[in-house]
Image (cartoon, rainbow, N blue to C red; front, top):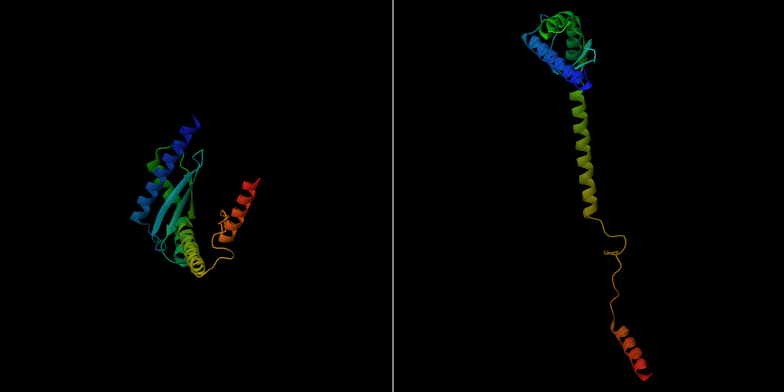
Length: 162
């Protein structure tokens, strides 16, 4: 069995576990502590012995703690449900991990908002700014004045006398 085939099998098993758990949780558990749970991802080890189940919960910190306790107490029942629907020789152990996606998304949104505010303040400063030196700092060819023309004429006359 090649590495690619093993990776594909892991992905198939992980996806099947995610579907089975989502369907089971949708039907509900008899535990009143269980909140509104969404299974976001499942990762299975290479030997298919352990599955890490990532989930999110709608609500505050108390809802998250209650749901974590409910999932921990229902792990055995959920594992047997996975075993019935998985069609593998061994049923992986399940580990439920609270996914930090909502918190990360909020943090990223706050950082983007702060960056926009800073960009606006810099744009305001730039609008009222003036140049430190010349407006065009690049060297341009020297323009001749009337005086320079007179000097050039004198040189031309000297050249003609020689």
